[in-house]
Length: 452
Ligand SMILES: Cc1cc2nc3c(=O)[nH]c(=O)nc-3n(C[C@H](O)[C@H](O)[C@H](O)COP(=O)(O)OP(=O)(O)OC[C@H]3O[C@@H](n4cnc5c(N)ncnc54)[C@H](O)[C@@H]3O)c2cc1C
Image (cartoon, rainbow, N blue to C red):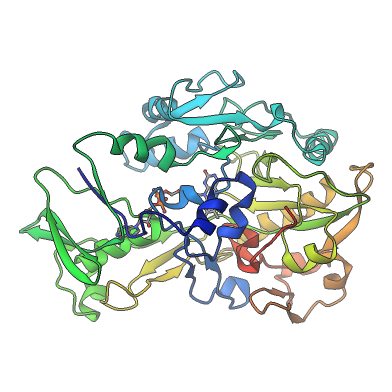
């Protein structure tokens, strides 16, 4: 088995030192461990281009992800199966989740116990007192409690399970790749960037890849698996002539298979946030900065929760955070967006980055649900609900309310917080319009650095 990885075998010592500590992940965004994609201008975000981080090392994005172990709701998988993806219903994939999990507690009846990926219950590991205060505030507001977001009831406020062992990030590299490399029949080839799949007729027989400035090929006796992530996988298929013929012909790529869906239907969850000032310093955390969350359905008719409000016990914005180190963040996100975008080739040069369009807030439905989630986040965290902690809102705060039609570029030039004439429904509420700083992770565009 030959594993081709575009990233280097080892990151620089400076980066390696930041991969291990679970709280250091924000410092990896935009670093050499990140592919560092940018979206095309997003009409739903007043034309801004978002940062789309992805890991570029053996183990991929699991080197920099936030370590929250969230399987997804069972209806997500059942929905795929109903749409024709046979074998992907929840009952069928549950054994695979169980196989990968090593969960320390018994909060869920279906958890795995002997797998290579550890699951710690953040609530059992000296959690931050502000995380507990957030869960209590949600309970006071009438949201149910849940013991395990991966259990029978995802909905509610509770503790995250996180992929941490002995105080360290435990990624797919630690859990799977490194142990597999001990087998005599597995070879990892790094700094090896797949540029094209090779075909004989309609059968894929190998891969062309670029390594040390030279093009190489590897032939497969049995099969070729493409698992280059949600951006690079469609890019590789398109470069290989699998996709919409109109797009391929435009770029002089010979068509191997007409498959117009390749690169389409791209979507990502969008997240924005509030920062609340605290009366006193928030103690440093021991885990991944986000220990608690609330999942709820924006509409009872939803088959599962479509909104996640993640609590982060540090400020997520570098500008506000530097001036106000004593603060916490409440981050609402639409985890079942209805907006759909695409990934397309910018050129037929495999080394060029593709065009990435998540089409954030491309539907009225996503806007409505995010606006409502911001309001609920505010309700979950005013001083009255966090009596010992929160003193008042720092972001978006009254400043943005007072400027219904302004654009403001913050100091580092990478973050732009924009208010604009709001969609009618939101305008009617006279609230602020504060499109997310970024997508996937709100703080990624601001080069967030925390005191931690
Ligand atoms: C900032 C951030 C935080 C996140 N937090 C969470 C979280 O808390 N919980 C959660 O469940 N999910 C989280 N996610 C999502 C999660 O990390 C991803 O869904 C997951 O890692 C995707 O896995 P993958 O194997 O599909 O792709 P990846 O992990 O991206 O792996 C793809 C691999 O292929 C390599 N590659 C790409 N192109 C080529 C090529 N042409 N040739 C050779 N190699 C190539 C890449 O370098 C990479 O190693 C987060 C994502 C981000 C960006």
